[in-house]
Image (tube, rainbow, N blue to C red; front, side, top):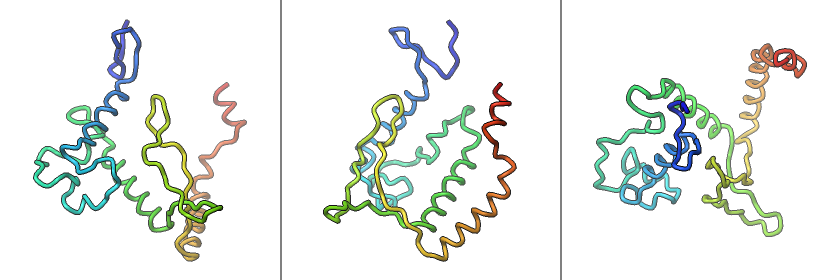
Length: 170
């Protein structure tokens, strides 16, 4: 049986994606208690101490922010595009909206989000949770609506109807 580089065979003969195994190893490496002070606690302030947010005295000479993109000859060629796109999107969201915890309608208190509540299965994704997302101002709402209207006219030619999709897939 031939397998591609993206699969592996377990002792019992099953085939699984290497990416899942590598992903779990990377998460484990990134969350070691020897390197990070309380790695499972959300603490953005740790990055004020140094670029990687590690404990004082940890040697960061071999650290890099791009470990999830692989390394060597197999490094993802889209690393800079992905990092820049992510940064721009996060900045735009923070510029446009206020994010806050949702409130319990009965008590009026904030509903805590369980940071360790993840879906069970092959993919490690958080369980959906509720939150409040509000525009920061009416001026920003107007800018968003104007930009959306302009972008919609540009991208309309790329939209398709279900009839067109059926013709392509038939």
